[in-house]
Image (cartoon, helix red, strand yellow):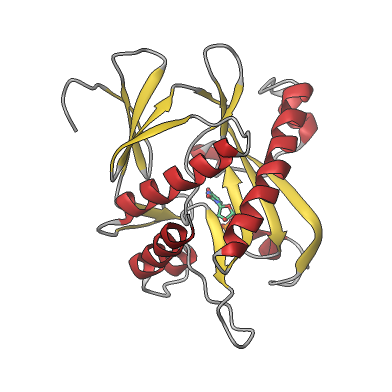
Length: 242
Ligand code: UDP
């Protein structure tokens, strides 16, 4: 990355740099993959580029559908420019189908299609291992007002509707996904972070039988192999569709 930009934050999968215009940032997507709160780590050459390209296309689609996001434009294959936001320390997970931690923590069977979307909110805090959090605890901790929490929940439900049909068009089942939001300088709530196979579960609908074929980070979490092939396939389907 050009040294005229100053690194302001480095996360597990991305680096964020300052921009000469103080309301913008430059986000570089890394090839690193982590799972289970970074207990499991690896590098996949080309993952950063694929997640950046996939996220950019999805953000553009959401913006067209009137969802406020931080995305401005792609700078190159693994770098995007975005609006600077103050990230709200919550991970908003929406589930259409039961899988992953929901099935480890409840008696709901893996693969159950939920009668209505379920929203689970986690506190974004690595030291505490991102615990599941309640609405009352969010208020108690003064993370955000109940009005803003409601806005975020409504936006998440709207985003789910848009993404579910987007992915269905390219033969993918949107099982669940995680979103992060933040405030811009005018206190507007914007969707931030990324939307990629790193934070969405996507199952291939091009299967003749009921076997689950994950085209997402479960390939790494569950040692299935073929992560880059899966992410490339998603990128290919998106490009053929748009
Ligand atoms: N997720 C994420 N980051 C996290 C935890 C979960 O992006 O730190 C995503 C994950 O990829 C999946 C959804 O949120 O699409 C639900 O994940 P779950 O709570 O089932 O956790 P997991 O099974 O990954 O531990």
